[in-house]
Length: 262
Image (cartoon, rainbow, N blue to C red; front, top):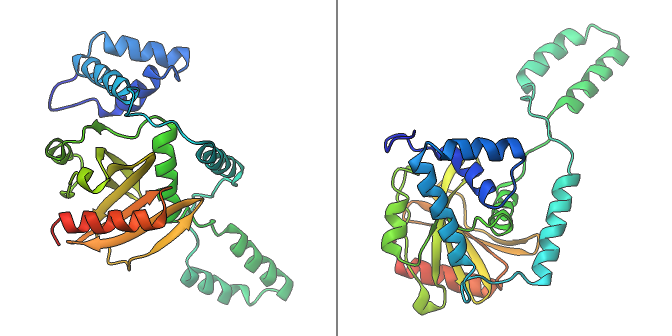
């Protein structure tokens, strides 16, 4: 049985799959056996079911448009068709030049073959930060995991992040500006855990990803049919991702910046 100082966070993914009937028989049985003796995970299961019930209520859940479904389907097909990336680290150029000095004693054909082998063994670059952001945005809606904490109360969302990330993200409800707060969750992007705030703009979802600033310049672009907007404020990087219009996303940035410490 779990204890308060050792929560079963590693069971969360299985619990979501269990609620959505996505587990095979072996894993479903594993979850049921665990639930029989774990009050913490039983409570978490009730929380997940309550969140789904809230999301399913009229006025809370927005059905995806056909255009959105098409973009998600196309993104998934590209992901499935993409070649598997190699994980082995590339040979450094310093080591390559050292070996090339010795290879130069070989016949030229052998040297050329060695060079070609080095080039083909270099791993393909991983997905860019922008691709990761769009993927997380799409996945959050596709996997019915838009929020970990579902509430428009900023005073509930902000302390929820305590202990889950190593910084304190600003949390504001912009309902009076037309961008109501839906809730928050944690994501894993670019090698670190980040905070994500979820807002609405009409029928559009805005995922706002936040982490300590790396000093990168602000950018704005379109990727896979989604608009991305990046800015830095108070030592933090902010990335807003949505299929809302670009001018609406810029208005969201302005309203959020005005409502949070500079």
